Image (cartoon, rainbow, N blue to C red; front, side, top):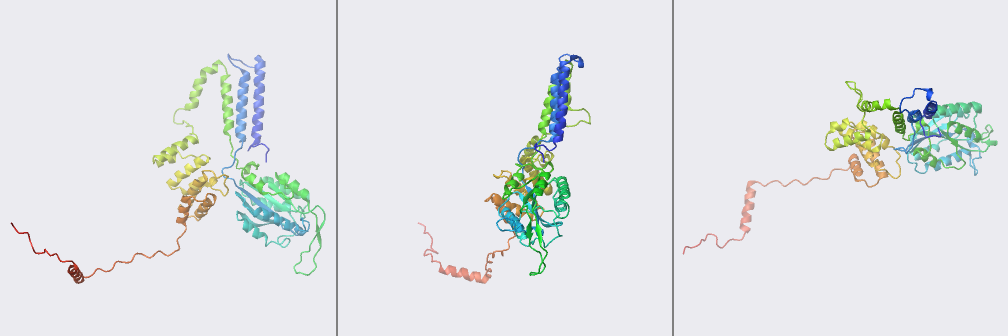
Length: 496
């Protein structure tokens, strides 16, 4: 972890050193005219300043400064719980054992929502026992703790050096993740110094910060005997907690030892939302190398301005070459900015020109550009590509307040999943209704995905059969007899 918000701070140091060297050479050329060839109108100090700005801009761009909030806050917390026999020592506070205190801490953490945060659970003994993979079912994690008996599973002893290395190997590379260790800090397999060096090497190689919670007191405590049969005597043991070892281990990996009674949930939220730093390889804070490019261009423009009269004659030609590029069949076209491509793609999409929209489909990382690209891919039938573009916008966590792009992203992802006949479409729509209740399009799409198990309603009764010709004649005859008789029937108008 670095104090500066930079992905590669070494490039900034190199750029700053070269910029200082260029500035010193420019100052020397300005103060000592005989140091180099001076042309008419040339100003070496400004040239040195321009070159220094260009070199500093290149270093800043390569260092990739980071700021802002992640588009889709998320974090994976790999919980490692000490399940050795020493956790049965009765010094967890308030008459509870260390194991009961650790269980209560996890119960408090998992008894309330942790948006955007996934948890896994591993048990640490003489080796590491994976218990639950990363997920968001916190009730299942709490239930899994009920079946664990300290000292009854795994290899004997406490191997923090080996076990933490095994747990770190289970973390996905590049995934925003940290490790939470709940233990008494007592290492029994190898010397504490060797275990500290081994665990630190594994955690730094995996770029996985360790946050630890220590249980127990740094004084010898009796440990209840573990026996296979109740009522039989077992070996009496004692245990001494080592919170100092956990503090050294956490600080060496880039994390820290949490204070007694400190709630880790706010810390995990800050890490997920980018308000607390993560290692560069696991950070999802947006990088902005373009600021270095703008600084380098400003330095280049200053250098050209102070180059003197001979350079002025070439300025127009240099600008023309820079804009047009090399002539002939090997001409390199300047790529359009993503904002311009998005405007052209949206215009083509509004006009119904799908081939042109695909040609100008934006590849930017802003939510609006991702939504537009996913819309074009959905109309083109590339459903899996649309899901890949929408993946950063449809994560489990969402910023608060709900951004306007969240609903359309989940809807389009659900339609792509439905087109691929994947069952995840229902979960996406249910998540949208949980975050934004009352959305009619989500309710309609969800109802269309849920199979209707009710029997179909009875159809209309069939019409009665048409009567035969004789019956029809009889019916007509009866109708005639029931009609009133016209008294003037058969009479006419007499001629005058």
